Image 1 (cartoon, helix red, strand yellow):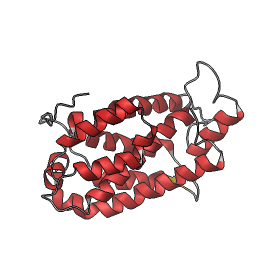
Image 2: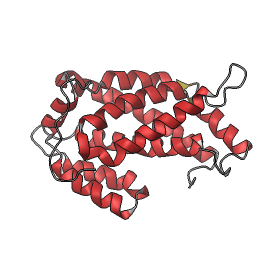
Image 3: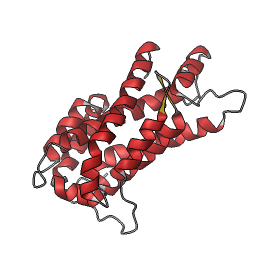
Length: 220
């Protein structure tokens, strides 16, 4: 991860971050009153990955880890059959891995543990954009980014990662420049941000409740 204080130039062909798509995918991921569909959740996270990648090395402390976790869950989802869909929803996955004693099985890459890491990353994403919307266009985003990180992901990172992440954040642009960098239509993105944040929060809260229900918040 580069922490040299400069924002990397993004390839002109990079896709923009689509706030409306995230809002729609997270809404469609909600199943019944208390579950979440993994496929729609991962599709929404793919869009969030664009946000991290468009910021270059500034979010290097999270983007590479997120990519790895998404791919792990894709592979587990591929193991489902029409008869046995252990990884179709969050609740199904948590119950299956717990009851099959897979959470402590050596050599097994746990979907429950992997999802927990994405869940923590989603909290950071939500808190950062929630605080971002209250800034003026000319205000720097580094302060709200550091605060969001310290309140969320920073609690789970080792000292050196925290130090590198905070140093990288000094290169954060103003709110106006950030939105121009990641969104194709900034006025539309600003208008859609509250809906996206609302849907993101619903998914986050539902996931939090499931991990609480199954007592899995402290997976190592």
